[in-house]
Length: 337
Ligand code: FE2
Image 1: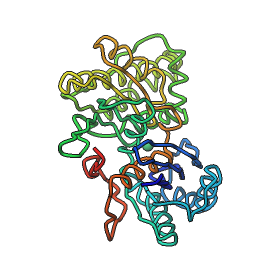
Image 2: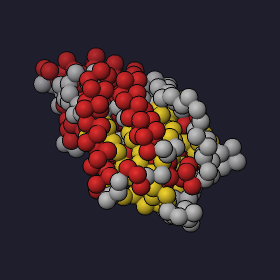
Image 3: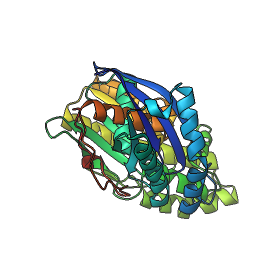
Image 4: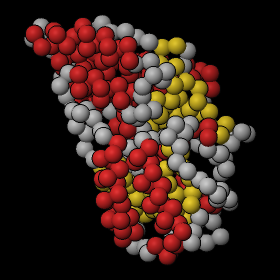
């Protein structure tokens, strides 16, 4: 088999991404481009219809950018991969329709990819991990995952019982007049006093909504009155939720006996979370690694990477494929495992 090249389309939420990956006959992956355009977050959050309008407007330009960065033409692409889910319905559909049209026009297979599996796979590729325990943390998702090679499926050991940690941090940010989780991180860097907050962990599962309600009810009036510093609330929220995540990951580590821990997804851009996970991994004598920020943020290159693995493992395209808003990691067969 000569080298195969796949174009990947990402459109689960605020980002429209197009990236290109290649795979040679020995299974060696190369990433050739990673073009994207992102709708910036606001205090009002995201309006699904407006995300879809953005993705539709920017689709052609982003795909052209990915092709030109990789110095390829559409006719040289062997398959089109797209993020099938989970995600916001309006946004998912634009990526799906665009990818489907490209695959029909070019006469190449259409490959459905789970967004979270793509974050896991690109992180493993980047850090040269063989079989890690994975903490996948993003806006809509918070899951502790391992690959079951016999079942050829990713298996979720623990997860949030309500909202994803990224969405929790975004909602908390807005309650306190900040724009998003990144601003919470910057405020937290200036905090020093640890305030009391609920700490919810059930086995390897977590929960965040009670913490958000508690912080808003108890500390918002005090921040407004100037008796508690916003920096200290942000610091305390981060220390508490990340401690919950690290504890759940450590329990999963004992259970799974893995020798590597990977953190990936949008919240894995947070330096404090990585610092805390690194300490836990060092104490347990296991390797720790994080995907780089360009792959922790939503992007098309990771979708292309999984598409390339599927193509090389002989994936047979299915008829009537559709986006799946509430898709789970177990829903994707890992045929290359
Ligand atoms: Fe993501």
